[in-house]
Image (cartoon, rainbow, N blue to C red):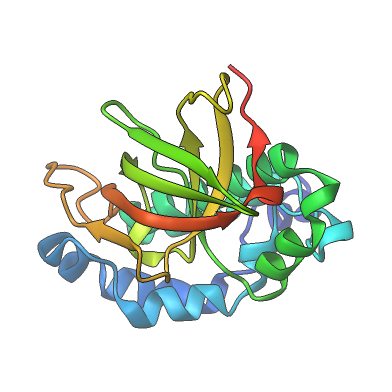
Length: 215
């Protein structure tokens, strides 16, 4: 038999007031293949965006159980919204581990501003780069960027090059004019998950932000 405290702990805490709006737009999201911009804005205004980030970065360092409670509630209203939110929470945690303390300012800013991240790196992805002074110039495309249309940042796996024989990683700002999101997701499920292709056309990133990518 569960205690009252145990029952309460299984309930969402951070996204409760947004659930009705998420559910109300679910059918339209499925038809249009895009989550309501107002719903995305409302979610970004909540602390659910900071659940998987550490206190050193301004995050809440919540448990997997806490995140599961939030996601379970969202999934019951709109599966695409829950899918994209889960992608943000888990990939941002991964990005923090990759970029490390040297990029704490960047990561803290993303956490503080409640910005969304995605990680397009599926089959057919190929992103090349070359050094240019203090920057790298990035060209190519990456596939399966769940949540890309709702995100401010994308993780990019950089292919091997003469300058760097091993794969590397960088965060790209999706608001940059040199980045283009192509709405290619035409699947029959998670129709509004925006699992799209992202194209980089002479996108520049600081060389100091490039880190090795483990394989």
